[in-house]
Length: 193
Image (tube, rainbow, N blue to C red; front, top):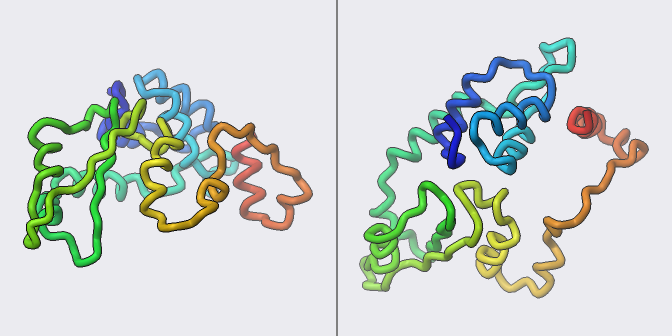
């Protein structure tokens, strides 16, 4: 299992973990031991939430894992080539190719994306290479992903100022500020434990 951070392997591994788990650190260690990268293991652990049914503070998934598995199977079976040839009016398609992804495509698929001609005979769609990223582009290279996506956000002169710097040191929550939002306080408290 694991290895190369394949989404199907991650979903399968998560489905085989008995809940509740004791901590995010436990899950991170378990996933790393199964061969997943540290970044993906940490990201997966952020999806844990306190289980109300667990009196001892155990954690479970904050999402429907079986639903995730169904959506992934649906995604794998989807044929989206017709969309590339006939996108809806006003829709511009761009692709992000993760440099290290086991799902990276190239050769004929990439050429087809770049060369597909729609009804108006317009030539292809851009493909952007995201350096240093595997499948989980948002964890592997968030700054590079932002730089690729930013032009599609429109003409906002202070766009860089609106994002959180990914290399900024973590901010410790101040207990007096947290009390105003009880649900957030419980979630933050659980994350800090």
